[in-house]
View 1: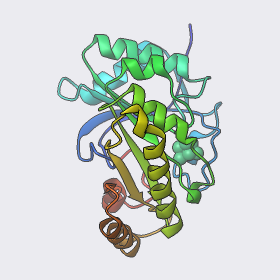
View 2 (view 1 turned 180 degrees about the horizontal axis):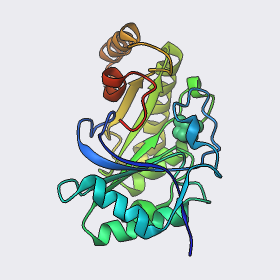
View 3 (view 1 turned 180 degrees about the vertical axis):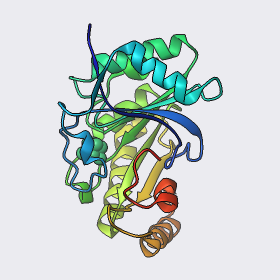
Length: 238
Ligand code: SF4
């Protein structure tokens, strides 16, 4: 029997992105080798750490956390799309969908997995900015926009003007790539002002990002990480 590599399963309100404030159960998988330098979940990196649970144990915890009220699950990580974890994620999604759950997957921006994305309700896909020291291939965002319209958001962490200029350039490039294909490029692209581990609420940075966005009128949405404002930058399972 295959076991699931789990970092944590818990109920919390979504803290960022377009579904901010919505209560749901998070299933956080264990394992990631992407290596964002400003990662706030380094405890999820080691593929051998965390718990090993059966599918029934994972489902029991989801039901225990969400009860009948929250049939909403966000699968996150770690990197739930990593080939080591993907078979487990596909198995879990299949059962959750049969049970009537709404399912979001947090994708790190390194892979588009059509089999998974077809099966879920929403895709939160990272476009990595220079502050992460990881690069997202823009053709993956183009593929997402082409194959999964109205079913995804792009999220980008903005630490400085360099990151903001990078997403503006990326959006313009994407528009040029897709304009002849008649693909809608008005999907939600969320700018998340960086709120790094150990920092207190970075008001100035948030205000800067809001001002850049207002001045440039590029159609991004600036949404801060609510859970970090409320609980601090280091608290887990919130
Ligand atoms: S993809 Fe997510 S978990 Fe992995 S290093 Fe980047 S921020 Fe951390």
